[in-house]
Length: 281
Image (cartoon, rainbow, N blue to C red; front, top):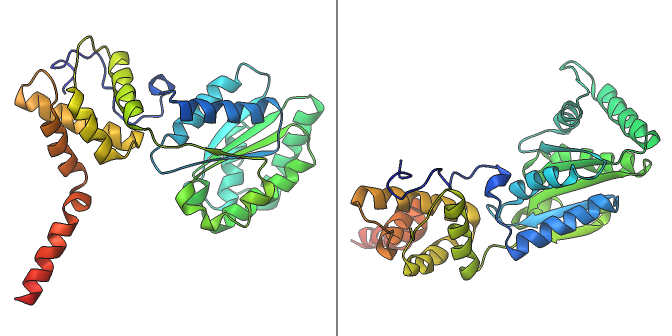
């Protein structure tokens, strides 16, 4: 790839959930601190909200590592496409309780309740993190509410839920009534976007300038400060820069890469006008 051309030892923009690539912008740092507050104070429930691609899943991964410095049992379950039964089954599996595929929902709930009770007796806080709550099946939300009320009888159980703030309509009847704290994760601003890219490049071994200064203006305009989109755009721009043999990525290269990344968003109005013109003819 482009790593050798730009003097890098790693690929920095792979959109992985590796905490090594976590960038602590003021917004990310505050979100992580608030989640840790919920864990340390043994609060019952918190909700992490933010636009798609802002790094909520990565924040939860970092939280897992941070929480290991305090005595607690913490697990993370991805609810993308999960049903209520699958949520309980995956939670038990993450807790190391070895549920069986044929176990009934009644048995699965009993196993989970018993485990929470055991942790209470041995004074071990339990933290259950659920990612992509807004993309779970509808009955999964009912199971989350049931789990919340089940955990209410067990001191030291904390539920942390992550969802896109643009898709809260499915959750409005449940989350406000049970959440102790809503944590917002905003996109990066223009200066944070530049610092984000420079930080990841430095971690990947960069010792010289890789992007021209004006390239960051275009980068922020096209990505709106969303880290996932920044990663994808930088990746394409670096490939294009390598293909052109340039020492640094220019604004024009970033602009061309953005057209490949978001062709419909950038060219949609043109296509629409041509379609209307054809129809008129």
